[in-house]
Image (cartoon, rainbow, N blue to C red; front, side):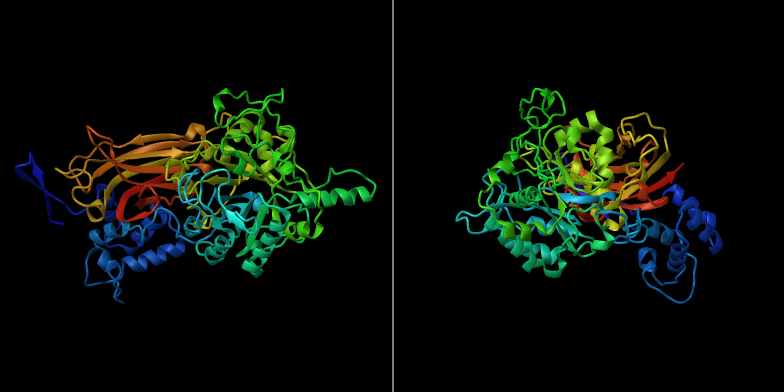
Length: 612
């Protein structure tokens, strides 16, 4: 690769050679173990790399294809005459993310997709239309398109009357965010809904509309989506359909309109019962955080005295009791003495996932009804309280119903929260600000690289089962180590191709180190780091780390490369996050991404993964 010259003391130049990547000792040893024996090479691929038999045959055909080229060029130029690979060929294969990835091939769904919708974690967006912060950024269809291209399967739209009250805008109500027409968002959703995944797309609607505008929305949805729009045949549902049954369908999730509830009340009274206990659950948790008037399912886990507090902005002062507000401000605002049965039914019949918001106590909100399933929404703060005081009830609720968790209102900069508490308690829709490029979003992106990146990840069995005495999984309990992951970081390369020579340091090559760790259950979470390799574009660390795992089914492997700086903040050199349960054993090439999750063209690490 030649050499780089750097200014030294502003008047001299210092020349640094930029060496080609050389095979580490483990790669040389692996090569010598089969050398010219194709049967030994097959054993290496089957045993050390744990490749599937079909993949062994494919890789063997690739590695033994003769070519006049060398290195990676040899691997992509085919010739009918077989030949054993050279050491350079073998190393080039191992260090290629395309040929030797750390996970299975992208877009290859391998989990059972025929279970009810509630049995899956779903890639979920929050305020999907915002281009930036939660207070004064623009509303647009562009972030919706970007989210769909990344595989997001739940899009949130806040519906408000436009300035003339004749049409519907999408915006973050009560803020300075600029609106975008709803129909424009719907058309973009239709165009990009299945560009990254064929599995169902959920649109969660935040409804702040009058009955006539609800009727207009019903017409917009049916005319825009046509046959793509799924319309449930039963009301209410006793069990959600499966993702497989809803392939390439768009489903609506929102609370039933107030008029529909009134219609059922009248009908029930006419039948002489006067009992509304069996009506669709349309109560609401009080909207109490600083951005509350625009958050779906906001609620207050207030004190037993019934006093109301803004717990999102004063979380540390909150007492954690489980009483919910008895009045539903949102519903009371929507009461309309003019009963419009037709409007209610047209809008109501499009709702597949009912967003119930029960009043009263948290234990009532989490009560499971065997005759119907629904969706409950809690803020991250409310979830923390709920899992502390009613953790088992939360898990039981999520076995058949859907729990949506959203960022607290004080996250005005569109930051995100740690999703692990929600996932370990079975919450399916962990809603994130996709424009908030932080560590938490990188965990979310890594989590949904699983199952072919289709946006749906099957929940582990322990979150779906109940013991003979009603006991469920306790993520806060003392858990035994199920599996131990060993990670070896050999080396890295590609920065010299993707960055300028002075990007990290104006006077010398970079000083790279790697941070490796686990994000997951509390006792599994840890970060470790390698030594710093000074003045090298191709750093060689050759260090191994061991991670005992109690909940490997939900563990994520975090990998970050930093460039060490004595006097300033360390420079970012790349990151990735990988679901531990889908790691491929053996020596693997791991591609790195930038802060936003975009993959670098050339930057990658050579690593080894083993489970004991």
